Image (cartoon, rainbow, N blue to C red; front, side):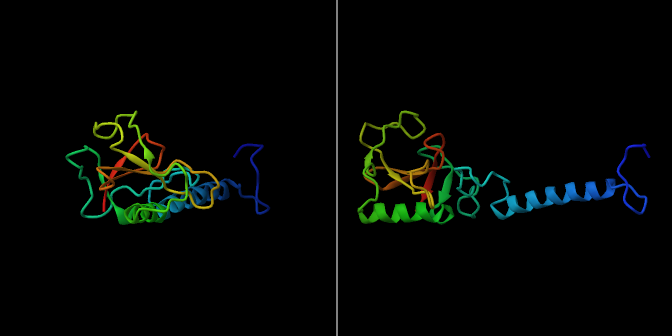
Length: 158
């Protein structure tokens, strides 16, 4: 034992307690990640979509778009509400809802301008529109979800 190592009043070093504390913190962090969906992501992250977890969507891609499917029920509740609002035809809470989505990122299948429309998926408790959107195609019969402001999409199985 080194000369400067901290000692417990009983004469033992505190190293065991330090190791136990570090392990406890690691277990706590991993446990929180598992409760949020198993990825350990930062809770402030905009990525809230569970990765395909149901038998109907696991590992499957939409042949038309090449995107992975996600079941509507696996999306955040706000996205489910937005899809229902689109199906009803509104009214929409944001003035930009229903605006033409230009597909400048070219992540969705190529179609003429005006084919795609975008709708806000409101973030809980936020005063801004956030990064989550539902984009529709084919006169609102196709649904796509992005939770990272158009960097990635998933095809929504309604």
